[in-house]
Length: 321
Length: 309
Image (cartoon, rainbow over all chains, first blue to last red; front, side, top):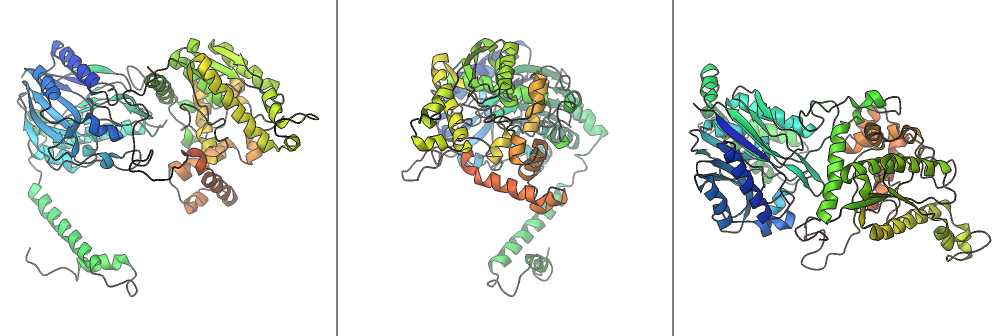
């Protein structure tokens, strides 16, 4: 199999300036094509910038927006993942990543997990997606596409792998923080992400691609450090921290098969077991919630722990399972 | 950090350990800190449509570090350092500030603020604009007034120089409120406001701030012999450690006590932090209309069209 050349577009978008970012994407697509790339990955909200706040509604585009279609038209014989604010028919705004292939928008992923804590405030401005699917790519493999925080929830890479993904792709706008002296790169965030990517690649025996932006929005610095990790968990490439650039990495897609034959973790997964236990856990949570809701006014019961214990033992309905 | 991310990394405390005391938990990768703060200065100016910057250079470590970072970000020829001594300021401060200016090769101006301060408070036996009682003004009033006069000078020079005022306050003083509202804290942006004093020292040593500036006792320089640490009653390494564990690492009082922080110090620092909350926030606006700035009208400061040109 011919190696696949991946281009990581570790760029610094201009906040809220859609036209300029579109032009930059277009130029980088052309550059990647000229360099022989088959897959070009752009970071989360690369078309709009990250810290949008109320600007989100002003830069939002529909999935059939002519400007997005124009970018798609530049992908004949090429796969590209681009990210923007998507406005749905009902005017909900999503953080979205689209797979553009052979001139069309082939697939759209809406960010599932919107961090709203610490320095993040995404839930205030965006709706959360509710579908997690893989997509068959012209590259001959299934891709699993996720956005930033999606990969801080284990179920996401796991579900994508079970759904047939051989290449997991995470596009991010990860703000650098937690400056430290004692770890491998001097930035807590970078170390966390590297750990996650290697772990997911190893556990799902898939290629794992991480494309993170650089530059600054307001007070936040995005640290780059985009990566490609092999199905055996080996880091094939790490882009420099903070430097803008189009980074090329060649991979052998055949490594997925080799790894999965040698280390059949996916074969041995037990999704039915997982599903059964998840159903039980959810049922128990619902039971606990119902019981708490029907609790008599406070007074004779003081410890919430006793309540939980009860719901798990006496409280359980004698239902056939 | 270009190229290999690890290549540029130095163990931070080793070369600088002799210069100052560095609590290990506050050690940072100075190369990353330099990279981010320099990029921040460059970005803030570019996004606002400015190429030049200026700052008040006191001769102390905070403004010296910011001068070094700004010179690296935009080139010394675009940086103006304004020295604004008062009559009672120590001659050593001005000398140290001049050393920084010479080292960087940036532009500088000296504005003696004594006549401005005297014009208001008066100078025995002549009363100033404040009348007779001005002659009796406390050190606190005088200190705050001087800080605000320096702010006035900086913002006036920002027009003649055509640049933005870069802030030079550190995280430690901001958290305990050891700063004058609309005085030394006034700025267009602040690159070192999230660095504790101990971390400022580390980065200063790494970027080449002259040693005598790193070594000397931090002082507001409002009267001869004044030092921050004598005024506060604890040292910066002690204070930085406590703030770091209390605020950044969310340790409870019990946990802090178990770590050995004295109860009296904790009590005092907590009070300083709580009572200075107002200094760290934009003044509140009464909510009346459908969309209110800072409440439900939330735009990035730098949005399309916000730059001067």
